[in-house]
Image 1 (cartoon, rainbow, N blue to C red):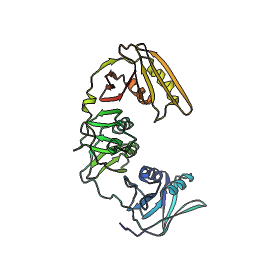
Image 2: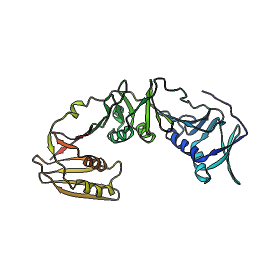
Image 3: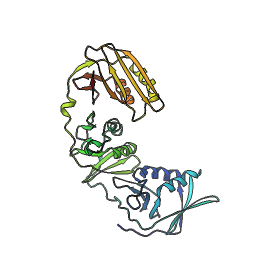
Image 4: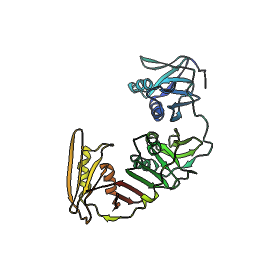
Length: 340
């Protein structure tokens, strides 16, 4: 769509801190590679700033009197260089001039907007999200698959009962009431943006789900297609209860030095001890703790940060033939085990 026109020559004082925060709030929808024309830009129109990268779009308040596309990376960079809270903005047909004292900088403004914008209001109306929605989404999303050969597993699954994800080796489900009319799939990359957005309301549209946060910034997420596998039988697995050692939290606190978001530690259980072992490019960690277990030796991989969360929550642990299950307070996590 072509949209042209700008108010040239008008100079206004801008609260640079407020503008910077609003730009950052939509920057998650800016593309680093311009696969779509102007997708690496901020789009200013009718007192709002927009961004769109094909899968995500965002909208926030912006100064009046600016219409056009400006390179996002450069605008953010120049704003970070100025120390004053207020800056002078002058918008012509072809550039935005930012000035403070004796310093001036000009950025090219393309008055012709070709990037598709989501300007329509939420047709289905806004519905409240659970208070801890972003936290629950973060807790679940790490279990989504990084292998895109099964696209539906590279998503987070939202249902009326809650949020879940699985890569076929592990499953995480958080039960939290959602008023979604149907189950939906959100790509894992988009889930990361939603977590940062911290939404409080949503509106489920035909191909998109809209979110809005306390700052009234809107995030639009394109839904994925496909059918998430039925994991009910796995989540209802029964097994032999295992009591985790009291020393586990202390051990995991030390292990956190070597824990990154993508780190997986190996946990080995024998009839006498529990051993956690992990390494990354800078080193390794191992600790053994006494434990009571009457079954065969087995091991499983798990994020040390996630295991720390489970240990702090005092979740119950059940060992099945092929899975270990942590469950409690509305959360269930299952992962495959390897028996010796």
